[in-house]
Length: 419
Ligand code: NDP
Image (cartoon, rainbow, N blue to C red; front, top):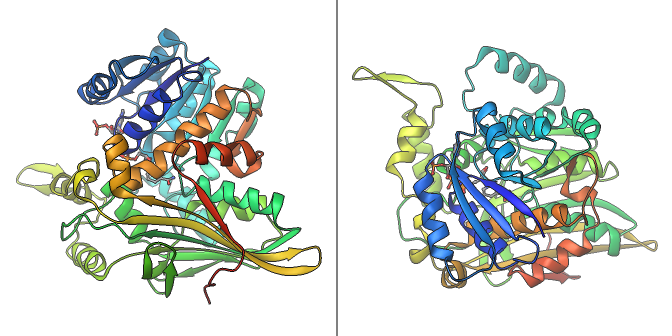
């Protein structure tokens, strides 16, 4: 029995909300609050008569801590699930802290304005000290640890698929298959086809920022940075087939390196087709991926935000996307003195997701784990004061719920490896 406030009502939230409503024993009441209230009302209407979860809706600007506090005070939730954008993470954490309410999210903080000199000074120092240049990192949210501990509340960070399920797969592998893990390769394959020459499967701004940035991986206790798309491999993904994949920086590498210091190397690869890469490079070359405002006919516009307005809304890709995703981790290490390699992955079919919830698989594979992480926090199964990443908790109940709520996983003890 719980009351949960869900902030944001885009592609991922739509899945998480519908999954909460399939789990009404845990989610007895939810409030969907976002910038555009009509989207919250539309999801509520879609679920009318199909669930016993009581749904209310609200309008909120999640950049405004006072407005968030007011909403939390009036709704009195047990937890807040943040499914807005990473830009809002700190404001929502501040409001949760002030109201002593648990906090859950799927993506780590990054600033909307990367030209802000105050943020930039901290960022540049971090680039130099840590050795990677991504705009997002955990330092901002990990800095809340003591305050969340003192307030007696939990912040659960990164319960999407990657980060999220990939981190839980790591905890599960360590618990059941390894005494020591030496290397982790996280492979994110989207074998889906939406038929557009160019579109992104989740928020275009966040997606394009991530993909056009330098890559990096963790090796022997430090970061090794690469140029964007510098490292390419091919992999034959179960149920999808042979795909090109490229090494990216990704946020779970940072938390896994901190929580599993024994691991010598952690890499993240994502598949891209040539058309996606050519479009992205062209847009980058003409300045359309820039986050710095420019003057256009008397208006100030941010190029990447204008591009977002032109691109298909990821939430609209569901009906036209066919094919499957395959996301998982290949672990190499030692058990009982013997070397072994284990691949844990999930395959998700875009059209099956659309039939069930009206969404494509990228929103589905993020929204389901968002619901699961929240369910485990509000039911007290995953409860620890402070700020925590998902791999810090017992993976077993999470893994069971993945099977139960539409993301069954496979353990392959003789997989192909990545050189
Ligand atoms: P969308 O852009 O589809 O949805 C974002 C939602 O947040 C929209 O409803 C938007 O409102 C709302 N929002 C944005 N700014 C504010 C604000 N200031 N106040 C209130 N609401 C706001 O994004 P997605 O659903 O694709 O992604 C949601 C989150 O999931 C992101 O943080 C993304 O990084 C993360 N993600 C994580 C993954 C993982 O595996 N861990 C994978 C994919 C995504 P409006 O409707 O008005 O625009």
